[in-house]
Length: 308
Picture (cartoon, rainbow, N blue to C red):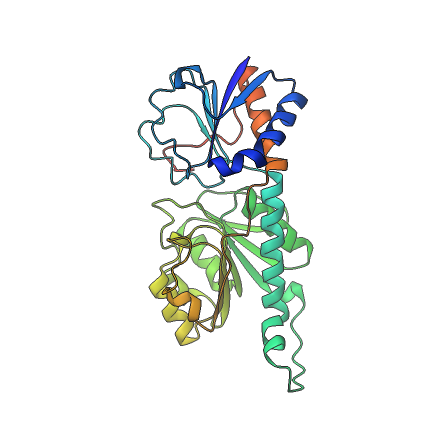
């Protein structure tokens, strides 16, 4: 029998437990799934960083910690966590992110906001074709690659940037500082899908925002610290950036006094771009436990030195 501890918020238990049990059965795993094991009895931990478990020291038998979140910045620096850590790469999460990004790119591309705001004047301004619209994506992991390829299939001219060199079908890929600048200079609509690490903090700042085409639009469903908020507000006020749609923030929920709420050129969405769905995430968890029990490498293993 494999003992799996569910260490997320108790409110998530009723949502996740049936799907996890079904996924374990489908994978041929004999699992006892509970919320209350003694630490020394636990083989695997299904984990969310906002739960009560913060000290992993007593979990001496634990073979892996399997996060329900795609982001691991709240756990990766925990010194008590010596077990392998896997982040969530879930097809449902990926599909949700593709839908959110594609929807907002099309909103900007087609000028939907301007049309909604102008319902009294006949002003026939047609958008360019997708092939003439330059889209940038910072971050070419599973989410960035999927979003970029979906946009490329719609005909958009998509350039992507990652810290390390990558080749992704349908995208023009860049890396390094020169590649970042080249991507920004052509990005009329830019999406941020980088992880939150020391190397990515304030990747959009006064200097990099100034590289973008005047009147560009920004989407951030990635991580709040990717953007220097003061610099973005200044760029919005000057017209360098026409509009920003922001789904993630340094402090969440976004405080009522935050200037993003009242800014006329900012759309706030409440961290909904890509939520973990129990129905699809359960299969990812079950597959990784099956792999570990068979002696195979874990999927989506976090590199502690890189922070993701």
